Amino acid sequence: MAIHRVTARVLPVSPDGAVLLLQEQDPARPGELYWSSIGGAVDAGESLRDAAVRELGEETGILVDPAGLVGPAHRGEQPYSWAGVDHLGDHTYFAVATSRDVEISVDRLEPEEVGNILGAGWWTPADLGAGVASRPPDLREITSAAVAAGGRDA
Image 1: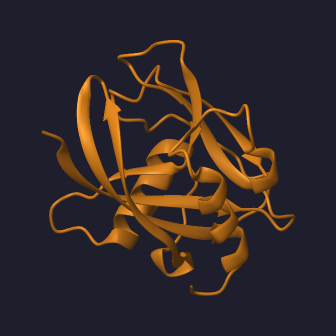
Image 2: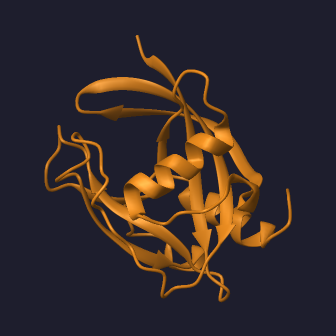
């Protein structure tokens, strides 16, 4: 049976409509790389916005105020597996405006993320087409919704 996991996710959006994504691998499938949004589990007593901001800081070093988040830009449930464990993710996605030249740091990764978050890159939704491995599979549509939110609450 899959574990229900509530997550808060952040899509930093540049002025030219690109979204910052992370290149990752599942530790149970080393070498199978994919692109994913920044984010993770919501801690007990934590709001979605606070969790999104915390995760953004941990995974990229980018610090923002929760009031700077736009949205939610998207919300959905998606089954996935991580480290051999099946989950049903209840994902809430926020957008945040930023520039492409923002400094990215992975110095605050959680221990299980070290060696599994391998890099970061800017992607336009159009670039996330066929042949690009992404999680979830509808990441292209989710990034489009974040770009469309463009600084306005959805």
